[in-house]
Length: 390
Length: 186
Image (cartoon, rainbow over all chains, first blue to last red; front, side):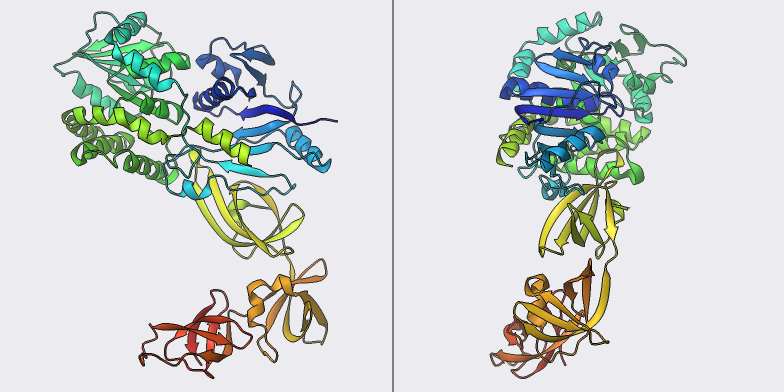
């Protein structure tokens, strides 16, 4: 008879698009294993995407050990037997395999209980998250499931952040030689510390086209550091690169604007890139959060939703982020974020000018924001407490 | 089957072998356009309520329960006995009536709806308003006639509620049974 394994957590991750799903799950898995000594099994249905952010991933393996975590390929039927553990997490509301659900039903019917089953939801700064976090989700089959909402208030499940992340970041940023060394390693030559470095990990937007048009006339060289992938699509027209197959290491220049094409990197490399740039343009959920932890100003290119609902989510974040920010600086940053997400070309350029005027205050705010956002306990800590108390 | 997104207050769904009445729904939008539905549910058999969350696409069995118009006959502890137009009697456990029990009084003429689950009468739904006599309330303190100043009152059956200051002992008042609020003096 199968019995529940204690101190064993399963995380199921279905990669819908890009690297955010697996990025969040991998970070959570590593943190639970490293900081709480939990035996974690991560089930992933797309090893290729995983391999992009963790190059050691063996694309051919149905099961493998990586950094102390068991990584299993999620195919149906499962190529590796699922053994129920203390906790079962379905990330971003993914649909668990029928055989997993059946095992839970069988366990419960045998009177052995069930794992603490959680739906780890998307991050949102909206107020309704407070009322929905940790609520049960009654299941027709009698199983117990709960919704776990990451968020920015004490009533939510918190924000994903490793215990030593801020220390690592501070050490890195204390020595400007670190960023210049990183840029050199990435093949960015003849740059100066005084150049403006902007990382771009966004969706396609016409706003960037307009900004490029403006940036080329900048007195200070502006260097866009753009990883391979869809982020580059926004620059094709401006640099006349239709049908061009981008390669890492390429450098394009127009006026004082430089486009540096970067290889896709692992999570540590991405963090270091964010720590090293003056402004970070990020997207989705994982890079959005890492940009905040970088303690640098950022523009969040939010995942577009029907009926422009993403602007409601953007506004909720802006309200929280700007609560203790100088009103002029807050307005400059909010206008830039809003215009960028509305694909507004002229307005994005105008709000960039206001952003530059307010940059000193925004830089200071970016440094204090991470501590206030974490609010004592990060997501993994709150999650472990939640499981313990459930 | 209905999705959580399609459910509305008043629907009855089966969860964990129990019938639940949907009392309230709130839909919000999570990431990638996914809907999250927060619901308040009442377990018909256990007479308990709970707050719960579903994915918008979660499917659940909605059930159509039989309902009959009945009038209240008498109380045979612990059962309330109701009767339909053909003089058939149905027993409903006192615990299943919940807050409705405070309005069930001898001689009441209002028609109630008795709900059946697998042939058993499981709950009673009152009409949205009932009229009851005020058995006691303090005299008006200020002579207010606007209805904005409220005071406590006890009605036939023992329930207490806030009524307008001008209401006197012996008055017949109309009450909203969904909110337990005073509506007017009849």
